[in-house]
Structure formats: C-alpha cells, structure tokens
Length: 98
Length: 356
Image (cartoon, rainbow over all chains, first blue to last red; front, side):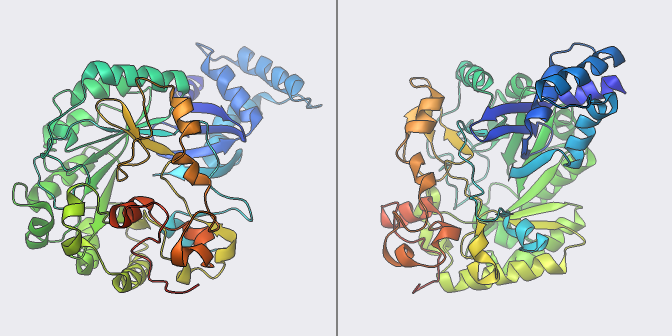
C-alpha cells in the first residue's frame, strides 16, 4: 500500500505561486490549488526513497510542529493526503483542465 | 450559483467576485509544434502545415525540456503538423515520459494498432483526435483528400482498445456546423467519452480560407444554442464541452459572477522550432525567444501577455468597450480579432452583440 502511494506521489508535480501552491497529476489534465500542508506532505513523501510506517509517523509530528497544530497529525491523516487529494477534500479551486 | 452543467459545458469556474484566472509566474503547458509536415491538408490549418519546411531538432527539444524541468512546467502539448510525421516522436516520448504530462494533438489517421499499443506503454495524459465530420464528404471538404475519415475511425478504435484517454476534437466551420449531432452520434458509437468543440480561427491557412470557413455572427448564437441542447440530450452518453467560452452570455443568468477561462497567455504558450515564443497557436505575434531569454522574464515582461490582465473594457475598443458582458468574454478571441482587423482590441468578429 505504501509503495502504491509512493507511485502516486511520483506522478504529482507541484509548484509555488504567489497565491499559493498548485499541483497536477501528470496522468491527467487537471491542475489544482492545494494547501500549504498538502504541498509540504507531498514534498516530504516525494524525496523519501521508500515509505514506511515510522517515516509516516514522524512526518505527522513534523506537520504538527511546522503548522502549529496542537494535536499531532495522525498517521492516518498523512496516509490520507493522497487519497484526499484525489477526493478533492484538501484541494481548493481547480484552475485548469484540458 | 451557476449550474454544474453550464460550468462543465463552458469550462468556466464559479469564483464569487474573484477572477478565476490566477496570475501564474510561469505557464502550465508548453505547446510544441514538432513538425510542419502533415499527411492531411486541412483548409483551416492554423500551422499552415506542408507549406513551410521545418521540425524541431531533438537537441533543441532537450534544451527546452531542461528549461521546463528547472522551472517546474507541468505539461507538454505535442502538436504539428501531424506529430506522427515527426521522425523523432518516440524519442520525444522517451524524454518526456513520467517527467511531464504529455498531451498530444493528432488527426488520428496514422494510429495503427501497433502504434496504439506502443503508445500505451507511455504515460500519455490525453490525446485530442480531430473528428469534425460524420461522413467522408464533409471530412473531404474540410481536411482534403489525402486522408480518409475511415482512417480516423480506425485510429480512434485502436486508441480506445489500448485504454488510452482520448478526446474527439471538433473544429466548427461553416462547412460542418450542421453536422455536430451526427458527429456526436459517431463518437458515441466509437465509445468516445469526451468531445470538445472549438470555433475555427482564421490563422495560417485558415486565414486564407476565412470567407469559406467562418461562421457569421448570427449562426454563432444558433450554433451555441444547438450545442447546448445537444449536451443536454446526450449527457448520459458523452461529455461535451466548449473550448471557447465567449459569445455565450445570453445563456448564463448569473453572468455577473463569472469570468470565463481564458487561455491565451494565462496557462500556456507556443514554442516554435527556433525557440520563438508565441502566446497561443493562433496568434502570430512573437513575445520572446526561449533560447535567448529567461522564460520567467518572457512570461512576466511581455506587453502582449500583460493583456491577460485586460478586462472590463479597459483596453477594448468599439462595441466591446462599454458592453455589459466584456468582463465575462474579455472581448473574445484576440487571435481572431487580430487576424481579421489587424489589431488586438477590436471586438471578436464572432460576437453578435451590437449594443451594450
């Protein structure tokens, strides 16, 4: 399951714009705005060669610290980033499609 | 709030009182005309294929890819001429595969089952296949006699058999405007899931044949209405959308809250063989050279691209200047206006509005 997520991350491209982050999945033609948290998580996942539970757990702590979230971001929430990205829950406007 | 149906049809976004087109520091797509060679001879071809020699050197494409990597560009649109006439096409796919989104525009006639199978091994986001006639007679009028509709149909079938995402692209001209429904039915019979309609634009060879191809402004309104009704009629069978959202204000009750998705200089630009950059495939005004200038600088400093900020009649002339709808259509297609009137600020010739 983690390998599958790593593959999803590998097909995502993100970049910072003045108004915030934008992301696309290169397998389809849609570009979205994403939140700072999602961009941070994607970047961390992208540069990690292999995902494991320990890393995901640590990432949850890092997200909580970086974004001043009192409660620790759960492992499940990190797991869910990609799922939620797909489900548009963490996505703001779709800004482009073709 | 506007209905989902209208949003999808016109590809516009509801954004309250904010403008949908966010100002990007760089384009999302780079549109590469990889070759001017084509096996068809379309009378509306904006690239004037086969009239001029030329193709990208692979080395130059590699330079552009490096620029794109460095600047985090998302997609490449591969177009022509006919991309499958480009002798480096497979090397190009190798270079782009899994690093960028790949979008391809083709007439579909060269896609054999072997080519479709080979294509399926690459991550191609979408292929636009030209399908704008339901029979050979109309196809022949618009696309010449060197290719055949049955070859397009075969190409589409091969792509679908290999699970490749495709969109059928219909360029609306005076020759085929009465055949939209028949072509939709043909697409449905081929199991095409998405079809996009775009107005003919009088650029390249299309400019020379403008009088034969251009729809008059009265027919524009009828064509939009027809298409909107067709979308509703076939909504459970195929997704229909309209690439050029201008000239539609009469359909939208809540239009004051809308801005339409404008592409020219907002999301992509076209790169020619020598690195010259243009705002779109249809507007022949150079805005810089990718091999000589920084892409960020071209994108940021171009006076022409600064037109993306024009709206609300600030720069528009004539009827558009005081028109109540200019904040939606932003004057329509600037390439069409430029081709017909020789300036960027007059009204879109397709607009039927006479007064504000």
